[in-house]
Image 1 (cartoon, rainbow, N blue to C red):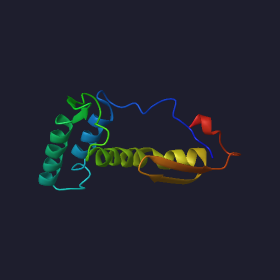
Image 2: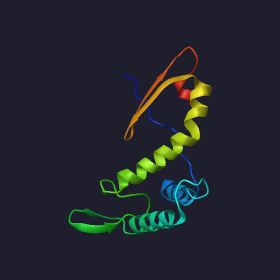
Image 3: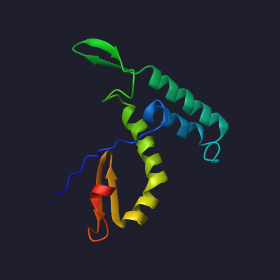
Length: 124
């Protein structure tokens, strides 16, 4: 079994993946993916969720200031939006450049099948 932890995390605009995911939702209209009213409703939903990002620790209610609270019901959905966005942007290019044979993802687990004679996994 091969396990690889990224040495360089994904770098995004100021605010990280939470802000970038909001931008992905906001830009769906430009690509004619959804109508303006639905887009506004999604942005309002997203803003409400990310601004009311509470969690408990030892019976104390805390506010998550950066990122999303782990285990929150909507965190998985927002993470999925972000991961699909990253895959859409980068997967075709990386697959071609590094001769990736197969890419499979379930939630945040990724199985990558590659031909080691064509690439060095440390260079991805």
